[in-house]
Amino acid sequence: MTRSVTTGSPRNKAIAEGAPTDRTVDRRDFLRRAAALGAAASTGALGSTLLRPSVAAAAATGAPLRMPDTALPQEADPAFFSLAEAAAAIRRRELSASELVEACLARVERYDGALLAFNTVVADEARAAARAADSGPVRGALHGVPLAIKDNFYTAGVPTTANSHIFADFVPEWDAEAWARLRARGAILLGKTQMGPLATSRATTPDGETTTLNAWAPSDPSISPGGSSSGSATAVAARMALSSTGTQTGGSITSPSMAQGLTGLKPTMGRVSLRGIIPLTYTRDHPGPLARDAMDAAIMLTAMAGPDAGDPRTLGQPPLPDLVTAATPVLRGGTPRLRWSTRIGVVPGYLDAPPEPPAPAADAGEEDRRIWERRRAAAAREAESVALRRAMLDTFAQLGAEIVEVSLPADWDTLTSGDFNNVRLPERSEPFLEVLRDDVRRFGVSLSPWINGLLLPGTAYLRGQRAKQLLLRRVLDDLFADCDVVVQASPIPFDIVGLPLITFPIGHRVDDGVTLPVGTILGGLPWAEDRLLSLAAGWQAVTEWHRARPEDPAVEAAPPAGERGRLEVWEVDAFGE
Image 1 (cartoon, rainbow, N blue to C red):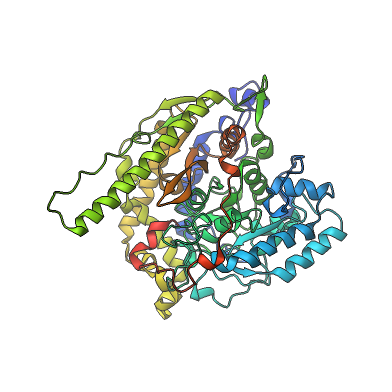
Image 2 (cartoon, helix red, strand yellow; image 1 turned 180 degrees about the vertical axis):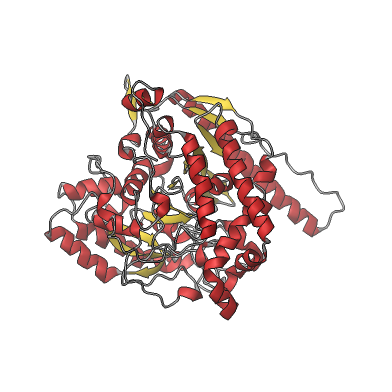
């Protein structure tokens, strides 16, 4: 399913003019792809993402990666450099890989005892890799750059646990394809990051004790770091790693990125191989980057993406466009402008501030008053977020975007409801049937979705698959009828249908004396990663929110591990997956 071009056709003209990918491909191709993917999943034709393929790794066949020649920043600590800045400094020999790795390891040693972003830190191996990078030839665009990898990506010789009892002693012999591609470009493994057990929820121990803290609130475990890629986000936000990987089935890249002021990119289904990633729901799992800005996200995705014979989802995709160019700000007449003319769709309710809850009666009890105070505080926080969204749209309009109101497709609430969303659960249970039969205790706190997957009737699964196709068709035909991208209040609808999402910070709010980032989510048409990155880059060219970083944690003020509370079973679905 490569670009089908007819000489003189509008699509051919769009390609020649450098239009974004969503204007050069037939969105119907994606609809047919999604239908085939659903059928293939039920017959087992997709195969297992955990089987080492007989074909050679495709790590050397990724898209060209032209790195920006970024100037050396004024930061004294190289751990504060962006990925693009650090890679450029290493290329120019203004910075060695060893200096960069030592800077990150120093912050890990100093702060990770409080933040618990990592499951495993491979300090000796990272130092050895850095020395080899400094003394050897340049291996690729990411030469000498240390990264944090989510603990559900296979890493040869390094424990890969998915933070679960089931994989507690597992040490893979080979790399996940996405990590292999990053490493082939010269990246260095710094460590494996804490995650929600089996990629559900925020990061906890397998039995539910809270571990990872939000880097912006290191003394308050009740403020979520976002899940399930919690450690990946905390590692990057706290400047312990330059970038990281995550996986998203129901918000697990976008949610932690929003919670910690990062730029997270969930690509189109199939852009990045799932081979070597412990599955959650194999028709909805999306690997992608959590980064400090749009440029770093573009670099990471370019390195990770591409066809892999070991994952049929990746085959037949349109060629990956030049994402680095897409993430490069554009100046016209000396003024930042959007790279492409873009209509941003605003869905109903996105700009509506919630009403303040009615005050309790004069004779109300203390508990009723506490509930009212919590609701009033929540309404105030949402009102702050709405004000920031309005300011964001005003800024995009100044950059050249057209802001349009759009309507949600018919039956939106039904098609995106929990009932239809739950059809993902049998795919979760099926690979683990033997474990479910042998000892359910090995699932720890995350057990309930696997049990629910066992109990979902076949009729409900079939009906849900049809609903998914109907939802996708209506999103493509109706939601995008008058816009190119759409703001999102929740990642779930686009996670269901495999469309790309990007999130980036748009401001801060103060919550009980704690300054926290506020982010937004934009969703695009199939393979629209270039347009989404161009929008984030345009925004970041005229704002500074992406440069803000949390204060270093006061280690002694962080609650000790084991005293951070625990996740209850009913909360497992509340923090992303």
